Image 1: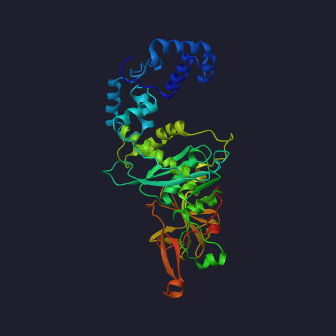
Image 2: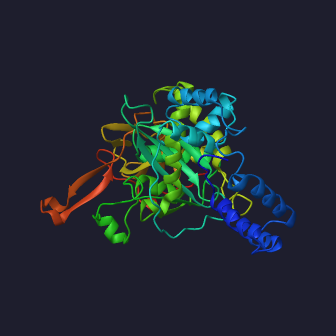
Image 3: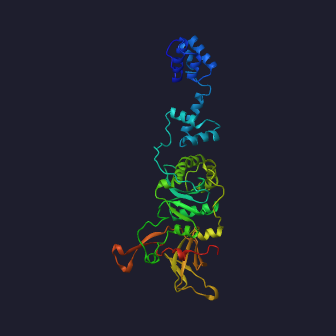
Amino acid sequence: MEGTIILSRKEARRVRVMEQIVLGSMSLAEGCHLLGVSYRQGKRIRKRYISDGVGGLAHKGRGKSSSKAVSASLRETVLSLKSGVYAIHNDTHFTEALAEREDINLSRETVRQILRGAGVAAKRGRKAPQHRKRRERRPVEGMMAQWDGSPHRWFGDDLPPCCLMAAVDDATGKLLGALFVQSESSESYLRLLAMVARRHGVPVSVYHDRHSSLVRNDPYWSIEEELAGSRYPTHVGRVLAELGIESIQAGSPQAKGRIERAFGVLQDRLIAEMTLEGIKEMEMKSANEWLEKVFIARHNARFAKPGPKEGSAFRKVGAQEMYNAMVFAYEAVVGSDNCVRLGGMMIDIPAGKGGRGYAKSRVSVRQHLDGKWSVWKDGVKIATGKATAMREPVRQWKRRNGKSDTKSRETIQVYIASKPASPEKGTFSLCR
């Protein structure tokens, strides 16, 4: 055999052993033992070496195309699709789309090699892994839900960013609920919680960051809080307490890594899927409907895993109970005319049993997620008000005794000019 012969390490080792066997310094049995082949295979190797020399030990298929190689035309088709409607798909998602939509069945590694070989870069770079201690999953689904909001240009670079609210189950990784909103807020967290409760039930606990909608981040205490020895929660925190859901704060983004990784997957797959479906803006009614009715089920079929143990810790709640619980609640004092005034809005309170009036009574005024208002006294609804636009509660500075120095200031969460309901007075029987 003439020309250059390229041998692998294994083949080069066979040449050295066969040289010793042909020269008689080593027996064939000893050579077979060194090479790790049977005596019969050793005889075949020796025969090829004697007849063809070193070239006889080179692999016969070297330099030839594999019978299983992807054809040039198929490569061109894959690259054409990748540069077209699947341009924003990652490698795995693109591979699945080829099989589901184009009837092209290739392995992910084959697709990756075709794309990298053509100079198509990966959608996301991979960072070097950092050492972190792994937290074990909860044993049963429903024991912990991780939730968060992800501001992103979900509908393309030519539109302003919006926020995707999502909750995942800690035990199974199942996407419990998701919806598009303008921004991460108290209202969006309540709507997400209502969605999870409607689809699955109320979880035992929620794991979250220190967003101001969930946690009081200001350092100030009101007089009532100082007297009580504890601070009033945010509106979402109060709802969690009333529903018996434990609120667990994460110390870092890595601590709630399951919801963070879920958002990474969603930014890859959800945007690509919406592009294929022609969903181009959040205001389209089909966006959140398609997200709940189509995408969540597809996502869970692909990524959800069985929990460590069977069963569910979700607690089912009735529709009326959820309606009464998912609210903004404020304390107010009924005026002498049996009317509650809240930020320029007035709610008339009808007479109670026996013509009873409620003047000077302290009541809980609640705005439900449909915008309607209700007034409660000792756990009993005594009045209702027409729907108004949902308004995010704001922080408002107030001064004690008219003093203007910084140390005497306190801050409370208000609806224009009213403070939120305290945990004791805000809690009421959800069954009434």
